Length: 102
Image (cartoon, rainbow, N blue to C red; front, side):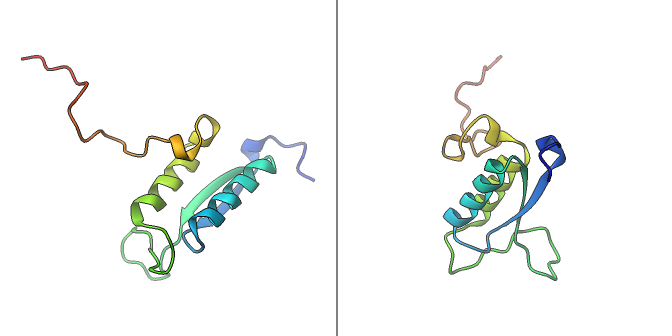
């Protein structure tokens, strides 16, 4: 039905954090295999007063992992690098490799 449309026109909403990590990653990969682009949203409480993802105690997620998977997917990094090789931090913690001009 949607074969005539480009993948960019077929964005599929994927909720993460409500199931184990592996199940959510398989769902993201399935959306990609269908020829669509996933749009990932971490699960949040219904009446959340801040924009922090809801981390369930019984699953293998943490807040940073939820944000990393959402950033990897929504910024289309999945096209270039698998999640295991994705550099998760935006800024490096160490000052190694930076040029000192003093």
